[in-house]
Image (cartoon, rainbow, N blue to C red; front, side, top):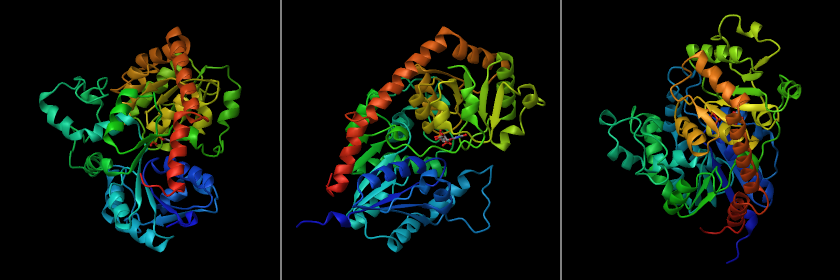
Length: 449
Ligand code: UDP
């Protein structure tokens, strides 16, 4: 029996914390604008919806819905218990999504979820929908969760060397025990995140389709192993290039400031939306920037400003620009930028790679240590401070190597080659573009996978 394609409904379920929802909404906007005859509904919390720049994109066939965040009205997120709000949210799942979906548009034919939301598999099974699971991070961190049971078997933290490499996990031989996200083999294995990710690693293979925010060739060994684990695996990233967000406003004139600098001379610093290094590390970084005498642009939240060495902002006036928020994608694409000092969140890593900018990694939590290791040891386009900024001298030396030495120039060349690979992947005929077309085709034909 012929099915009228105009009735196809795609429900998209986001994980509302950190920057998770952003690539999912970008991808949804691209699908919705490519398939104007289909209906798309995007579900996340009201705070998450309000924070997404893509939520301002108006498409007649895409509606954003709020789901409950599970927090009491007078709830104030605690800086010392960041998992608190995740826990409240997870407690009201999946009923919050279920009721928002029931009050929203028609029954879903496709459910595209953040992979963190493993229950989406059951929601899809309940209504006979196809389940598409999007892993917004990198393939190596996904692999660490898929292989958590094996890792827990082989790695007993009390008895093992943190430097031990993970050669027994396909594709992860370049990583060490110490790079693993907390909650895989060390730290609290029963924390909200550890349980959520453990379940995710066990359930994701049930998805009809797993979509990855990476591209063929970037981490070939781990990707080819993951492809054997899933029914269908479509790497279609970098999503920031495949489905670019509209340019961000440049309220503090970062781009015109960059215009005044020679190519490849400026250090850009940002630790993402959540992390602020501890005060002593900020002091080493600030003093290292001062003594290396390099121009720098630093995106810093108020929490960081309060911890800067006394008089720093005065002393670096003219050479350094410190802003509350930078249009990071455009900054990293600017020719003046020589190196990115980053916490190695996956979005930041992909944006740096897309701009051909090598990195100085200072990872903190979650997948950031894995990403930092991949950047420095697999791709060879950066150096890492995986135990933190240890001294002014070490920061100064790293900046000098990356900005002024042939080693830094070589890394910039390699980063530029990666940037070209990424651009080719999302271009017509590229592997990510082809995988996107395949996903679109399946949805448009209401195909079963
Ligand atoms: N970002 C930005 N301007 C800033 C700081 C961050 O645009 O001043 C954006 C950045 O481009 C990236 C995201 O915030 O897309 C951070 O994501 P990532 O995964 O790197 O880190 P998280 O914030 O999730 O730790």
